[in-house]
Image 1 (cartoon, one colour):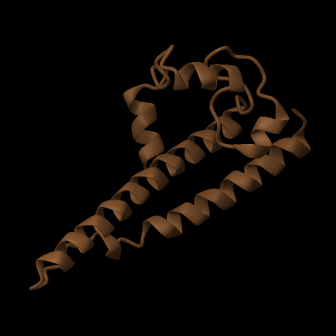
Image 2 (tube, rainbow, N blue to C red):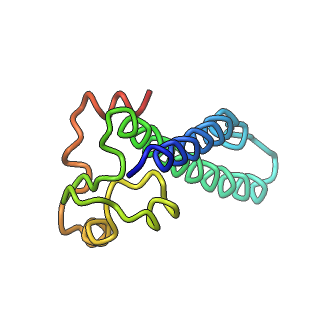
Length: 129
């Protein structure tokens, strides 16, 4: 991967990190509200559950984006963490924070290998920060 492509992906990842960081600060939707009407409470609980799931999904995505930025910094970006083959540019254009080539991602989705087994506790804590 040439320097121009690397800078393009880095800019995409930084923009996504900023977008997600701003969105994760808004947590009013998960506040527990009490109402005198039981049906309103049920509806609010459903909305809160949806907001929590969205927050969880965006947190995981932010962790993946930060991991990709760390790989850009250490020079391993664009290399599959499982098979160590180069990830195709078309895949990186679609999912710039991906850790795996399409073949390994499909295997991970089928649980044929432990997807995050390569991350140590220190790496997980670094990505969470």
